Each structure stands twice: as C-alpha cells, then as structure tokens.
Image (cartoon, rainbow, N blue to C red; front, side, top):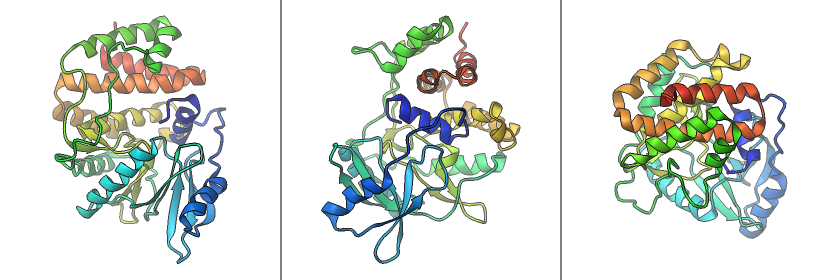
Length: 317
C-alpha cells in the first residue's frame, strides 16, 4: 500500500469492507494515454477490472488482440523495473505470475505497468483445501533470490525511529489501547534480530483477492505485485494472509466465505513452521500495518477488529 489513507482505504475496501468509504477511482484512460504516447504501444482501454472496490486496475488490449492489465503501482519506477525482471525469472521456473510487459514513468514520476492478464478468478470460498494450496504455492517462492541481494528486505518498523514512522505515530496518538500495543511492539522490536532475514521471494500482499483459480480449483495466478518484489522469509506473507482472513469474522459478505477451520488450519501451520519469537515479530508488523490503515478511516468496527487481534497475538496486557 501507499502510505496515505486513500490507498490503505482502497485495500480495505477491496477485502470486502466497503462501509461508507468511496475511494477515488483509478484514472485508467488518462494513464493509458500517457503510456501509449512514448511507447507507441497502441493499447486500447477495454473496461475497469471487475474486482476491487477501489477500481485500481483496468483491462486493456494490445493491437494484436492480446489482453492486458493496466495498473499504477505504489512502488517507484525503479522498483517496478526490478520487479518485472525478478518476476520473469520466477516465471521461467514455472510459477504462475504475470509477465510485466511495460513499465513506464508518468509525468508525475510515478509508474504505470501493463502486465499479462492471466486466466482465472479469486476464490469465493476459503476452506482447509484452499489454505493448503495457498501455503504450497507460497513454498515455491523459497530461495528464489539467493543471488539477488539487490532486492530489498521489507522493514518491520518495530523500533522507534527518526523521523517517526507514521503508523507508530498514529498508534501513539489514538488511544490508551493503541499506545499499549505500540509499547508492546517496541518490546518485541528490541530483541535481536528486529528485522527479517532470508532469500525467498516475498509477496507482501499475499491476500485472497490476489490469487486466481482455474475451473478445476487450481491456482492459475499470483497477481498484484504493486508494492514491488521483496526478499526475505516467504512465511511472512502467510501471517499477512492470516490477518486478511480476519475480515471474515466481522463483515457479513465474508462470514460465509471463510470457514472457521480454514483460519484454524493456517494458525496451526504458522505455529509449526515459524519459531515463536519470529512469529511474534511478524504479528507485530502486521498489527502495526493494519491499525495504521484502519484508524484514519474512523470506523469503530474496523479499529476494534485489529485492536483485538493485535492484543491477542502480541499478548498485550
């Protein structure tokens, strides 16, 4: 996500929590015009993508009829060019990842990406079988970046810093409960190491809506790399997936879509696969990230959801 509230709100909305927030729509046609002008690509706008309340992607078509997807990523142009290179390597190893065919710098300095449109659609139901398939796919990202030290490791932001991290400041200012959570995050961050290690390919938004499935219920695509590729511990992404499943406890559209034993299954996998101190660090990061996103939205239900989750996972007293 971008650091500003608009993009965090867009991500929340795309996970089924539309509430009263309406995110500004992606100006796809004007962005496409900026892409076509310097590249002479001749891409044609088709329509906005079906899924995602934020309208953050558009379907486009090449002159030869090939379908594509246009997005305006949150990462820099340089990071997205690196992403295109790394994802091509992952594709060569059989991973179902879209080819990033164009990375263009726009007039405002941001990036636009035209990527391959993969077949399939997000799942409408998450059960134990879906969880096992998601975990197995994530395992295929292991050790893909052993020789790519140029790919950054995402910071966990668990220690005080100067200038202050915006998410930490939000927790500091919001309430006594968020201040207690922030203090606990700092306690966890004080342990060594405070940051992530590893040489796996990490999808930092490995959520339900970013996984496509074919008609035989096999994963056909791992999409939305708009934060750029990251290097580290692939299991970090599964903790983010677990926090994504939490929406099913609150929002009526999701309650029938996430089986209770699915979340329990993922909890078992995380407890078995990740050493407790490391798992606590990952939960501290995702707690900070989620609260950073929802507190500015001023939705008591959303805030309570991730306050409660953070208090449980971090053993806040």
